[in-house]
Amino acid sequence: MKYDDYNKKIEKISNVLKTNDNLVTTNRKGHNHRDLNFKKNQKRINTNDLDSILSINENYIDCESAVTVGKINRMTIQKEKIVPSLPEGDNFTVGGCLGGIALGSNSYSNGFFNNNVIDFDIILGNGEILKDVSVDKNSDLYYGIGGTYGTIGIITRVKLKLIPCMPYVKVDYLHHDSFEGFYNNFKQIINDSNDDFVEAFVNNRNDFTIVVANYIEDVNSDEILVIRDKDMFKQRDMCVYAQIAQKKESNYLRLVDYLERYSYSAFWGHYLYTPREIRDFVYAGLIYSTIPKKLLKSDELNINKYFTATSHIVGDYTRDEYVLATDIGVPLSKLKEALHLVDKMTKTYPLWICPSIDHYHPDKIFCTRKPEMCEDNIILDLGIYGIKNTRIPSRNVNKAFEKFSFSHGVFKGFFSTCYFNYDDFWNHFDKEKYEKLREKYHANGKFMDVYDKITYRSESKNRKIKTIRSQLFTFFGRRYLEQINKNKEKLIK
Picture (cartoon, rainbow, N blue to C red):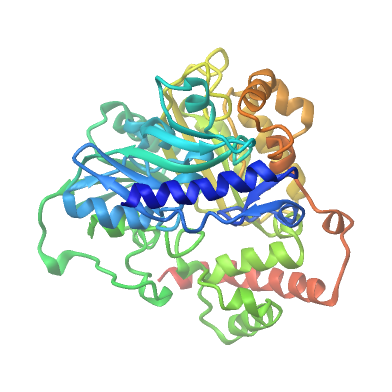
């Protein structure tokens, strides 16, 4: 019955595409904090009702594309199974994970999200419904879809493999006060591949923490950091980064809480963005008084609201002058150079490091390394999410990150603000292969080109039109962030 309903849903979308001659996009905002005004001029397809889990057994879970990571976790963990390489938040969708470049802290042994996809369905620009795209069927599309960000077609179903798990994890924090000690330990852990989950944080220039988590069958309930709701004031102790900042050695979590430990803010802990003094409340209050009511009523919490509001009010390019949210690919052997660059350009801390093994395939276009430039098969996602503490223009910061990734044969996350030069972009990625894919699968004239989509900036924001609201937001927003930074240590405790 579920598959019958699914077929009716996709037939409806197919009919819209068959009769529409304009560019098409979905109605979803996704996890972009970039300017998305381009959607206003395109035919928007509602994919929100593609939210059903179609089937599940010992080896796989079959989902419609708008099913969230949280919904999957709650279905599979009770069966002592998980999908490998899910991003660790609860509201990512499987379609978005496949079209983007998703990973999690067990990717170091399981690869990127798309490596764990068995097959998927996609509706092409001409309305054709292409089913069961896999390694053996339309393999060029199977390998090529990662990182195309909705520019090939509308993904409607994704079947994912399952691996065994246990209901709880023990999380260990391995603290280091030198890069050499941290790097050698981190590299050894990755090479040994004995842990179920691995990630790391750079807390400051000479302060590093490796976080490893391993399954356990059972644990004393008094020892578990259990949080039953998403009230931001109740997340402080559960937040992994709060444990790091207080130099804890270990703690226990339910697996579902571990897998969704970053659901509660866009950054590494609400303690950084929770005002504690009167002046902080004043700045925060003035900031939120300028946010449109429809955003205040949304379920996006705290600093994420700040991000969403800045994108609406002053544009993502102005926002980036104060707060960054960007990911750069870094080969494991080039981590030291990358950290020097980030410190020089931003002085933003903490930094997140998530390793993934890269299963290279020549038909992958955007979500793999160039082996002639990068011999490492471990790629690090270096996440720079936080307050920019230099006066270097955001354009220069991002272009430096883009240049670094490209020069080492890897990629920068497209979800963040991008400044790619057209020629540099297509000198790095295989334009001919991408265009052949778009032509073969009828994307031309129906879906935006990926370069145009990720570097889009609206005309009004490009001219930097100033309104009273945008000026107030920028003025008080900058001071709000300064107060947060000044009180960081106090807020952590």
